[in-house]
Length: 81
Image (tube, rainbow, N blue to C red; front, side):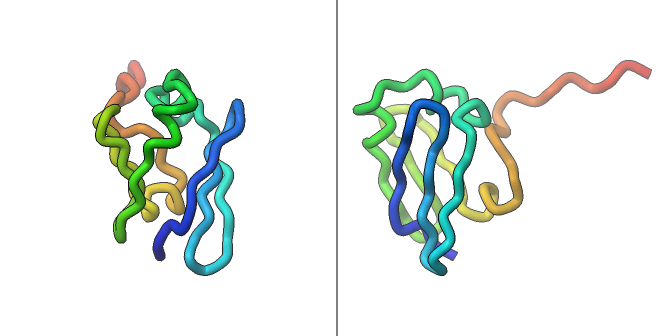
């Protein structure tokens, strides 16, 4: 599965996939995207594996989006027992 195009509104990232589906992903899942400027958001490079923003040092895989995974660089603290 590959991404064909990427777009943004104020709260979501839209990813059109090669099979015709379109994913709507909350920008809150990706804080760097949420706080980026419009120009920074649009500077996306699409590859066979996913989406890449070189200037913001961020890579998002299509597989991760389909699995419902957001930013994995900030782990939540373990629950207290």
